[in-house]
Amino acid sequence: MKTIFVAGAHGGTGRRIVRELIEAGYRVHGLVRTEDQAAVIREMGAEPYIGDLNGVFSAGLKGADAVICAVGAGASGNPEEVDHLGTVRLIEQSILDGVERFILISSIGTLAPDQMPDLLKPFLLAKKRAEKVLEESKLNHTIIRPGGLTNDPPTGRVTASIGVTQHGRISRDDVARAAVLALTLPQTESCEFEIVEGNIPLDEALQQLSSAQKDRSGMK
Image (cartoon, rainbow, N blue to C red):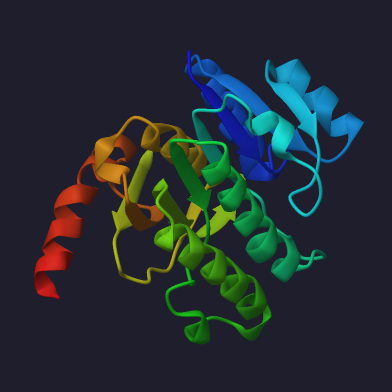
């Protein structure tokens, strides 16, 4: 049984990732901020660790085989502290602790933040800076850039693309499923992709990413 460290485990997408991991048979260490949040994660079957990416958080990383980072500043948070600096600290600590795999839940729009609404730019620029650090690290990484997140039931059908700024929405449940699938799909290794609701079964869409990446590399 592999151990997965989930940062942002109590968030809207994070809780769904924890649930998917537990159902798939993984051992889960969930980073949360409060004891109330820890109780929720513990009840789900995961082992909670109270901490903060801008403070102390490394205890839960011990023995982890992979990290899924699902943190987000939210409307009232500071994107520079959370989406950039906090995520970078997690990347750096993962390297120090010898974590083998790092999956980052980012956002559509980081490839072209100037084309997005002004309200979103600070968040997208912060996420983009964290993405760059992860890209330049030696971690076996996957960057998932979902469209607008909804709490709708999952459709299980998506469009996944590399290097193309899409527009669309996607259920948090489908994003969580994509993150967990990425742990075992070699097509998602060293890969960055956008994902929105579409017509292709989720697992099939992710399996097609390696050929899409090869096609894009050939065009350069």
